[in-house]
Image (cartoon, rainbow, N blue to C red; front, side, top):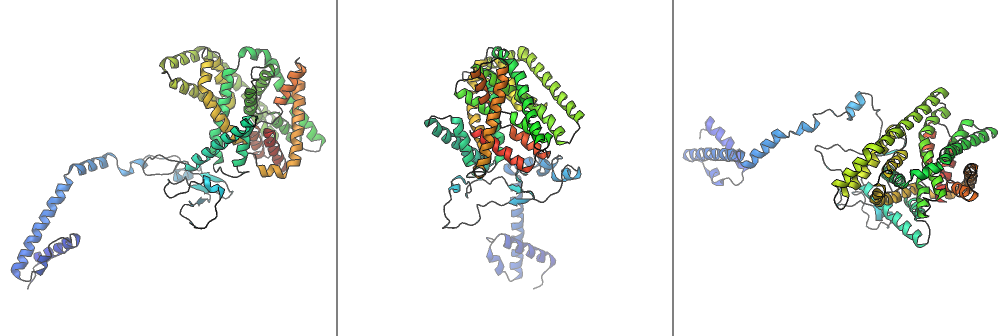
Length: 533
């Protein structure tokens, strides 16, 4: 049998169809004569034509037309067409980043599944299971800094979920609730329960919280809303009564602490700059802790409460000036440059407060009345607008080099000058209580129970000394302004602890090599323990 070229080509096509379509008629394979071969070629050609018609029919279907239209409208490379300034190649090319070696921590959900593994209490808070979404990847650099990926690269925009952060927030909130309930049943301030709960679940305790930075950042809203509510409750009339002792007395207290510590350091053979920083560090008191304590004791509107709050506000205003002073004490800038920086901060502070004063008389009343008219019976829009106003003013204050605390307090005072101050306070009070508990628990997480226990003797002695000195200095200053002994002593005792913002000052001073490692640990432990007492 002689096989022509057309027949050979048709045979190849037939074999291809046979492999791709097993259901093709096997009876054609039995053809062994020329007539049967012609029949085979004819049926093969017919099959090819039929399949081609089927392909054209599929291509002309409505679903395929939609797919082709979507492909033209949304090409796959469209997401990557724009130049991302934060991309790896651009960051390295523009010398905005340095190449370093990091290690990616693998998820443990697919690792060893021992059947007889002993139960650990930490497993209760472990989110590793087969059905959950993947956690955010974790990276560790050569200095053992741990990083959580904040923006994973994906082909299309998708909703990201950090389950570890959710787990940490659940642990903190539940623990703070349990601690508050326990101390309330014992007749003690719930604030102490929040602090103790935080110390138990933090890195110094049972280590239930993984993402400390993220949790503490969320908890920072507690300070913002605490001071916002304080500004709403604050009476400018009462502030005028105590403004002398609050402003002049507060500045005098900071100055006395810095002078006493600097002189003491010089007499002991230490650095006077280090002593001056310690004085500025010790002069700070905890606005959030003291305010929460005064609220629980219903002493906010009392005379000693007003003097204490006025002094705390002055300390918040002085934070920017103290930050400008640190480079001078650390030797990284000259005295003249430091003085210029402090004067710049003071001018910005005065200008900021002047602008807010003008806005509180013009735009703020109109804005609040507009929100009231647009709000429904639930006041949802008004509540959201109040929170947004607080955060906006606090953000502006921070961008100007001032503190978030000052901006949030100023926002509250601006609204308190209108007729809607009490109404606004009622709307934001639940938010304040929630974030205040979260903040106090996060402060407790900074307290390493094991570290405090190992050095309890020296730290306890340091705390007692700090409390005595701060009480004497503050009470003496208040007494010098003509207040009676009881009011002076109550103010001094209220300001006797070291504020949580001192952690930020201490961290900045450590980066400037202003304090040595041993002194850093001493101040850190003293501050943590003073917040517990």
